[in-house]
Image (cartoon, rainbow, N blue to C red; front, side, top):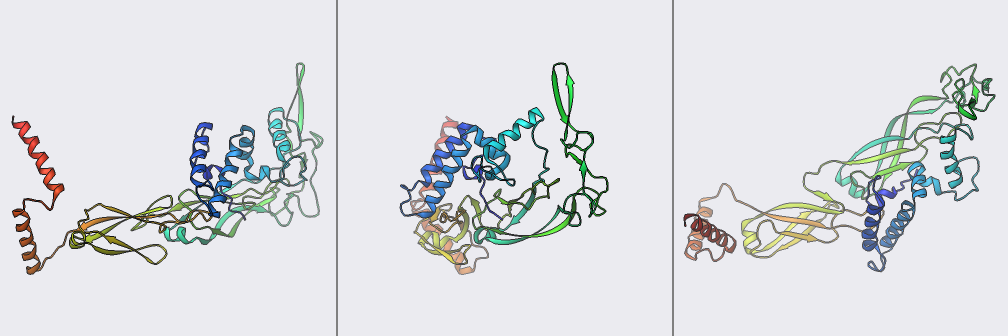
Length: 374
């Protein structure tokens, strides 16, 4: 199992992004994570290298085409030294593309289909990471026939129509056109005595239990790849991959933008006027203390560094932004009402000197009314 981050996700681009968008996004992220801007930060250096690796691949049209088709597996074995399994580098990739147009080359191996699983997570789970248990319905290799499709003790025979080539030729004028054999469907072999379990398919549907370690810092749309956990292949082909897409559930308190968390905290009018300190619970089960200066206006935002969400793959923590909103008291006692009325009377005597925003607003409104009357 691997949790490879998609190159497009690293560059924060859609898969349909053009070269200009890729370049602009790379420049922005490279400036943000460059080691010179983050001295001594090993995580930032690793992120910078990953971003550079992603851009080096996607800026090259041929490499991008190979990556879009095979993912990182297209580059894992380098050039032409690949064996019978896996990918043989660009030579094999381009020969595959060539075969699609010419109809020539090796017989198809029937790689299994990739699968998608949508995983819902809470913000707390995304903050800490989790080990998720998955139950999926998937086509797996038939055990009695070991994926051959033939009844145990028998085997498939060479197709008599194409003589085991999987292709048949038709002459059209001066040209010979090759097409997939209609008898064996390109396999080159036919099963005369199919397996009783899979009925010649080589695969059966089964319920499969998987466990995946979801790293801390995942966000809505994060994709996790589990290599080889997709559907079993046909005719000896390898299995597909399982792609897990993360979907975040709404949180009752926090909103999220990348690694930054936002929260609105109700604060009493006396604390806003006189000053004080409030405590805001955060996702690591501690509290963030915020000093409120006297005369703080409602809507004022305070940023607490390093108390937001963790960056994916260990890039530190984002910030927590708390907006203070005045909470108007309800169900006043007789004494509280008397004090507020006394306060109001003093305010009126002073002509709103302690409320510059409202004084300025009504003064401007008075000017507008005067202009309308004139």
